[in-house]
Every structure is written in structure tokens, then in C-alpha cells.
Image 1: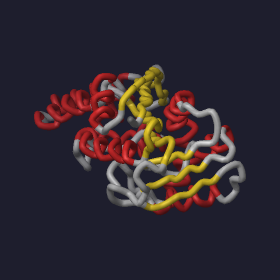
Image 2: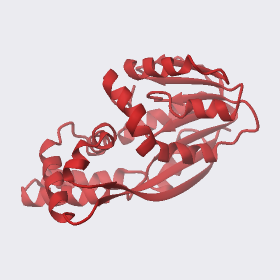
Image 3: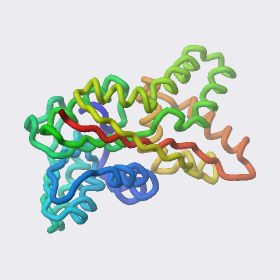
Length: 272
């Protein structure tokens, strides 16, 4: 499935234990605030990873049914294990590797996409799936980093490109920053997927790291940020630029924390 990261069983456990509370929770909290529901819902969670925040949703809305799909078998297995202890609603997790998925057209009242690791083209397919599974009047929720996120790393990548005479890489960095969705382009993408009445909320925050080494070793960096950089740059090998960035962080932020800018956007849209 486009927009998913290949995870090992250990990676899935690390996401659940460390990445969810430190990073993914920032996106899920905003999505839950924008969820419109007066009672039980039927929700399709596209690219669900380990099934977060599905348990919180059924606890809030007892009787709800949530069907999660993801290409990563270890993540789905962990989600299923967690679901076995849930009594407030129904959590059903399935492996899906292609679009359209096995989910039926117009089957759900809500659909959710939380921080897809995807190229712009892959994001188009994910949004189309979010729309396809909704019945008329249903709500789609998409939470992801918006343009202006990670600008400190982008600056370090530009510096690496200049100092190492990597002009093509420098152009990719410029293009990646512009390719991250803005408020306007995210609305356009949702409307192109057949959705309307788009409302987007934005929150800016920072992720703090004590050093370049801490940034390099943080599970958020390894499992979320680096795949995000690879997707937006359309490169699967960033070892040299990343080593430069880690060393530069130690040099430039030697007397304080490295603060990484994060523009969290969540869009709500409806199915005609």
C-alpha cells in the first residue's frame, strides 16, 4: 500500500511505546478534536499502523466499529493483539497492499488518515481511498505535517548540498519543501478526491532533541522523520546528508536543545 513504511515486529512495538506518545499523538489529538459524532461511528482507518488511536475512539464512542488497513503485517498483528482486550466496540484489522482495498464503497461514516509517509502521488491515492469508502455525508479526517515543517533540517540539507557541490540534491530539497501540502493545496487535493466542505486546523509546535546524536537515535527520527524525508525527496538513501545534519546540529546547537519546527495540520472534509 502506498504511503506505508515497512516495519519489523520490533519497529511496531517501538512505534506503539515511544513514537505514539511523543509524536503521532500530536496528530491524533487534533484529529479527535475535529471528529464529528453524536454516537457510535463506523470508521475506516487507512494506513493504521498499530491501530492508534482506535482504542481511544471506541472508548469515547462505545459501540463504534473501526476497520483498520495497513500493508505491514507486524503492525497489524500488534493492532489485533491490542484489539482482543477491547470491549467498548469492534476493532477489525486487515492487511492491504494495493488500491482500491477490499473495503466496500460507501460503507463508512468516517475515514481517517494519520501522518501518511507518502509522495504527493501516493497521497493522491490515499485520499481517493478515504473518499471512496465514505457514504454520503460522511466525514474524512487527514492529519499530517504541513509546509513549513522540518525547516531546520531542510536548511542543513541545503548547506550540505552547497558544501558538497550536490546541485541536484539541493534542487530536490527546494522541491520537497514546496511539495509538502499547504492549507490551499491540501484543500485542493481533498476536493480533487471528491470531498467538499473542507475545514483545516493548524497547530505549530517543536520537537526538542538534546544533541545531534539524540536526534539521530530517537525512534521518531528513525521511524517517522527519515522516511518522511525520503518520501518528499524521492530518495531512498540519505545517509550522507543525514550524517552532515547530525554533526551540524552538534556544532550549531552545542549550548542548547535542537528544536525542530512542526506544523500540524488536520483537515475535515465531507462526502457529497
